[in-house]
Image (cartoon, rainbow, N blue to C red):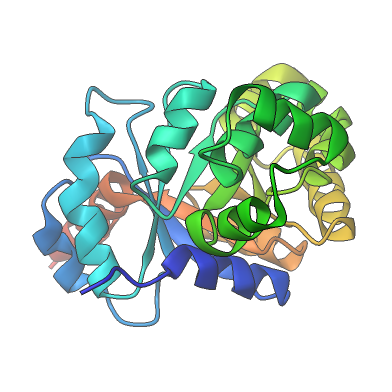
Length: 260
């Protein structure tokens, strides 16, 4: 049975102005965990090998279990290499690329995701002149080969924010996603997630992305911070991760039990 086009569905929700909700899987590679995800909670999961020793291939069983439950599975790459982006997009519903700030680099990363398998001179002609090998090739890539691919560059530096309008205008950019640790570090306020300057910067990012009809959001591990950003207009909501949610649930439950 073919895998449903969940990436396409996720893109369509964002284009309609809907808010989509997801979380990170950093440790979970056993597909059985998907059985305990309540219905109507997640639109997508981002599996990540950026801050651990896992390989993205280890998340493949989870990816297919999520698909069976109707949840899109995006993969965050460790590198910012175009070939890695293409490889991920051939397997997952989309890709999240860390620390994208240079506009030309962003354009080539997007092309690796949504214009594959075009490469070399043929790709250069599309990027520089809008000249496709044929109408048939253009239709194949847009409507068949890459129709299910979600491309999300991460905005994690002041330079990236300064280039935001141009990044969001690149064909194939479906959402932008803020990594608050990296961004606050480059702002000179490391890990101050409630700092007024970060809150103002997030508003700037959300408003700028919306002008380009691109969803924006920021990762947070505290619910009140995620709620604040939703109220600011965030539509690509990534809350917590598998390990943190398990820790928080156990801490809350057993702290209360030990008081009895």
